[in-house]
Length: 125
Image 1 (cartoon, helix red, strand yellow):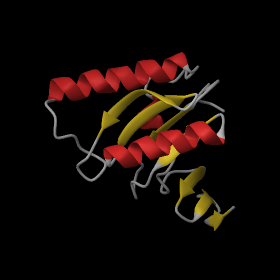
Image 2: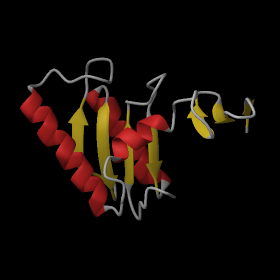
Image 3: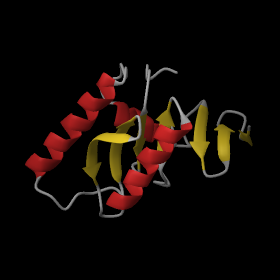
Image 4: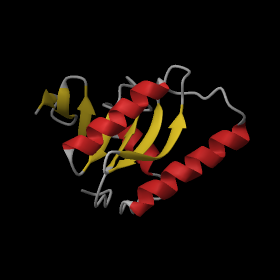
């Protein structure tokens, strides 16, 4: 809830350390649509609302890197962050924040391939 998201979904393949897809959203259909767009791009960042992609940043090199010029990547990153803001996201860098939700070496709760983990207690919730 801390993202402020009021509608739609955001998803990314930059998710430390395993770099699986990580997504948040207000409904399953937008989360699913965002994940499908990531699949089509073979990795990246996506903002979706009402089943439509509002902005995207393809990262086809291992889901982490772009093969495009820096100027294009920066412009696309700015677009996905602005699109996320239109959905209510209040965080200045939502995709960076989202990526660290999956980093299991920092406390408190983290999302892993095993599920939600309480890092302080070393247990799957």
